[in-house]
Length: 386
Ligand SMILES: Cc1ncc(COP(=O)(O)O)c(C=O)c1O
Image (cartoon, rainbow, N blue to C red; front, side, top):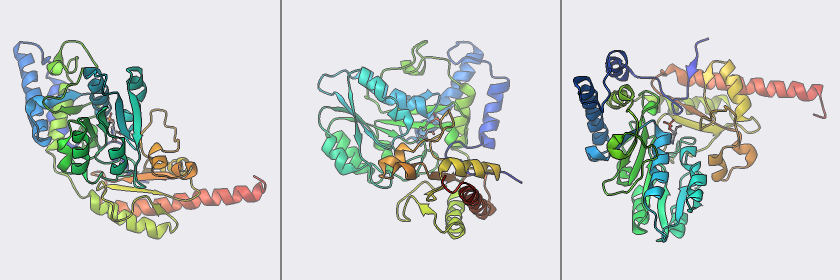
């Protein structure tokens, strides 16, 4: 049976444009961009070209782009770097939207050790930050607010970014926007007003291990990795030239089509599994390839295991290195119960999929659900008190 990859929000396959651009730097390009000789200058030139492409896409100045190892490092650099660089006894609070990625949320213990109080902005039922709650929490003692552009689990886009930006700016705080899921897929729109923007190459058909942080001119951020002063003193360490070149090339690659496949999947899956519950109503704006749902009484873990056996790669949301599936903090923030938050499953379509995959994915989903329910029925008739 042919495998069907429906986990593009976790990572995407490397596109041909990126692979072709990277090859010379993987095979022959030996220069260190900090070296003064010809090979070093060539590598530095490649970095400069890539930085110009990123600056154009982020609609910012060339010098505002700092290359990192990916979205996680960018988000860490944004919030921890801002906390380190702005010691101010009057600004002691940091606000995170409760549905942020762990790349943001898991910096809280470091921030607390630095003396900040981290507080959570509630979300609505669709994982989007509640701007009224943000407004209540904001004050002139807040240093940074982290509110993402689109949620990686539900796929919901954060609406009203201009109000968000003006609330944060009005309090004199910095806005970090995690745009890892949208960058290269959707226009950044009002997200470009963020002081700090995290992006990652492998979510947009570039290589794993390359990302960037846009640091708006005048925003103070301290480096987390110190060494040779690379990236204008913002990140020590020899740059990942091939990865960065691939990142820029992937940005220019043509894409699209995933919205039609995801919409067709939604129609077919609703027919094939009648009690399936979609997380987002139709009128909530979402990432184009995303379809997120739960099936009452069917845990995400068992569903994903059976789907995998049936050749379908989907996911429960955030990829965790242990592979364990715990009730999702995003779904808990949306007000789901613990049990429901352990049932959320994400199909995310992209360039690996064809139109036919929509109905194939839906029918394999129906088969997986039937298999799990059949196994449960036969178990409960064999062990009635179980
Ligand atoms: C919203 C969001 N932020 C941050 C990250 C982390 O990015 P990376 O895998 O490049 O470290 C991810 C990846 O899953 C993500 O979806």
